Length: 235
Ligand code: DC
Image 1 (tube, helix red, strand yellow):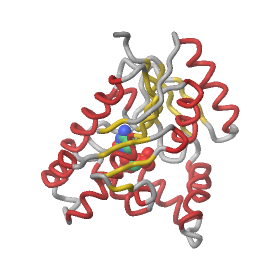
Image 2 (cartoon, rainbow, N blue to C red):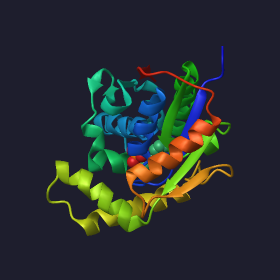
Image 3 (cartoon, rainbow, N blue to C red):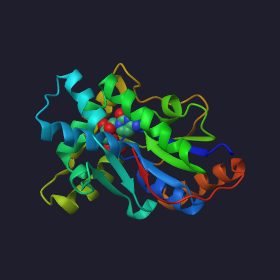
């Protein structure tokens, strides 16, 4: 069996990982794995089970029990938690904040990293977006990107998405949330957000999606022997 072709995309919230990851996966015919969605789904499961943020053992248990399924093409990816479609629910503010909390728990990370590796190794290749893909999940990924952007630019992009669900959201609130989340993701003891030594770093602040996409595609094409996989994955 040939080794799967792995593209890692890491970076802070709102840097464009998901938009570009989906697009890249579609263009290359690879599976797209949104690892943040997995942490968000575990956060929902923990809230539903009434497990407290401070209960690391309880959160680890929830992560082990939760059945998280990513299904569909990159553009129409649906996320299921224990058979229930939670695609919309995981995008809410509470799930985002919860994900940032549960993702700091080493036992939760160990379990989700194990599943991410299993999913990534199962097919011809995939694009994974997250915080630790190039550093921890697939340190020998074929291509690693680190996307970043100024906090204000990331907050503006996040606000656009959030306003679709909550018209009352304002910029300051979103910016404060981004800064909070950055701090938590970058300072946690286990697998903090970090740039892999061999990552291609792209600052997307002043670039259009098209420009970033072209750079990423060119980089991948240079290293890709060829790949074709769409479909579904259960973790
Ligand atoms: O990318 P996102 O906003 O959906 O991620 C939600 C949270 O999960 C975010 O606070 C960081 C965390 N996360 C992580 O620690 N490791 C990953 N591979 C993906 C997400």
